[in-house]
Image (tube, rainbow, N blue to C red):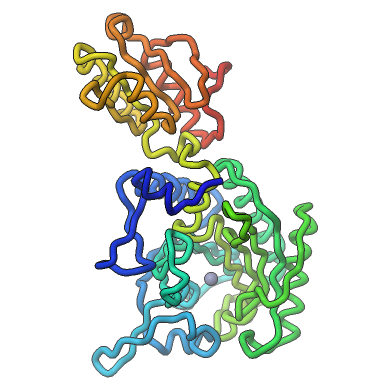
Length: 408
Ligand SMILES: [Zn+2]
């Protein structure tokens, strides 16, 4: 395991600047490429699972967070409000209140449930200066978030489906959970007081974990203020745990926002809100990926997927042509030419890139490509289109593998 802050700077993924501010990282092109690939994966997985995406603003009126309960239970973590035309607006501490308002803006029938609303959106946390660092403790957060509005009978299936999405994402990302945690309320006034709701939500989450066959540990004092949650914990390079993914059952906010649907009986009923995040924030997810893989990302996430290395100036045109063919297939390629040093030095420089295509006089003449894989393997030379088709197939499948000998 590696320190994501050091590697992030060395690999040119992200950085911070005193003039922008502590806890407000910016993403360099290679880091942005990783993040974009991750976001595309999440968007497609959510579409397949029946989610529809929305956009909502990163600000809201103070009254919105008073209604959600954030103002009374979570204000220590919120930025101070801004005065604007006699009103107060706040940088949002979470997306949930906006999604509840979007749900409430239309009438809903039981036939529309489960209604799955997703957004990868910004939110803000007033972390103290002393704890800020890298991508793990930040003040501006971009959360892979979603809310499922459903009936009480549908909750268990929705929680299990979310756990399955998390399992598949971890497989594609090459991640292993440290453990599953059932996070329960602790003592003190941090949590909304309604013992009967807490018991029902906790029983639903425990049932979903049991039926998914997942071992877990219960932890008091780790719940959200409005309900219990399943947290998928990962460990960093120093063995410290943090939460990436989470699934929560919320009987509180639907009541605060007076959410309704019309049942088969024609009467109005209260839906449940299931909050879920497959990978948490993109900041924390990419930090963990950097540490887990030491910069050697799975092919589909790698900032550069193919490094094209012409042996001498004479092969630069063929190298550029191969890079263009990569572009046409949506593969991220980079020509690393002789002006950047000896072939040996360039091979070492590109050691984290999944595929190196060395173009010498013979490859330039016959149009074949001899790929060198990051793990040292050297498959037999193939016509360029065949070689790139194999790489494209692995990328499209979000495969954790570097090469499939049986493919095609
Ligand atoms: Zn939420």
